[in-house]
Image 1: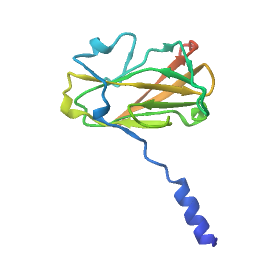
Image 2: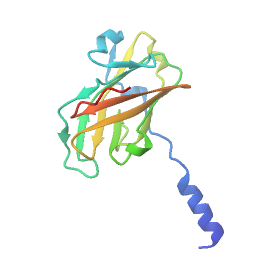
Image 3: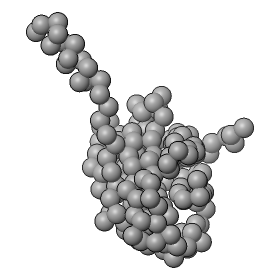
Length: 164
């Protein structure tokens, strides 16, 4: 391989792959208002109801590399014009992965397609959850809607210390 070919190959390898998209046809439930979906969830960015801070009952998958799983639905406000993205911080990507909708294999980031046609007073629920290397962790995720972002921690099988 020539030097130019090697440089071109390494440049292509460094290009980030786009995050998988969770489409509107993957919604499993629509609720009339956030009160109908809230339970112990937390509202982020006024548009995303994330799972509660402590999630017990981690299940063993008996698969590599993600040996543990915790089901946790995601609920997103309808009527959005911008996608909602969720990502695992870089330093956590060898320890945790996520999956909602029919995204295929667990990933470190994904985006929810904006489902504007369903109206702003509807909330759309998606199935999925967290994949782990170990049976417990305090997992941070970063959420983004348009130019705004927020992070949330999830105690999976363990309670997390309060954030300052």
